[in-house]
Image (cartoon, rainbow, N blue to C red; front, side, top):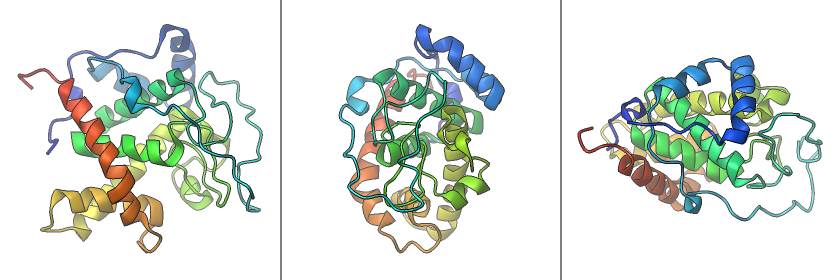
Length: 238
């Protein structure tokens, strides 16, 4: 499944025109290689609305001491969410998040199925809201990194809520967990690798916090939909 890299796509649409200037400023300042990834990635269609989030999550009733949920959104970036709630970002912001993640996938030559898993991870974790934060943990940003993981991947401060930095960190974390999952699932079906890639994201190396169940019931169904969309956008000769 999905051995073709995203860099083989035939045309790529940049973010909507009214976001393009801010995109260039943020990515060139925070992570210039995203711009280069966008240049070399080819993609035919923008993501359909039915693959985006249309209803934000609930406000948490209680907040842990280390939660980032109550922190105000102070960024002047054009990529901010409306609030810290899951999925509480405009469709334009969500679509831009997907496009930047696809740029990272192209830059790192992820296979299609792993790219789709990364998109599904972002959906399940943050609803493509770069400013999302959990109420019960320190998790925040596109990939919902807790403090220790965020620090390890260079997004320990407010950059955790930067769309460009969050996408870069999520792509690298996905690749690192993918390599670990390959070792764990040696001689097992491909589904084992993908499920464990997400479970390692959610649980860490212990795999004792329900990540596999979430992978099977929530992440993989969306990953299959994203992969179908990705591969339907490739030209027949590819």
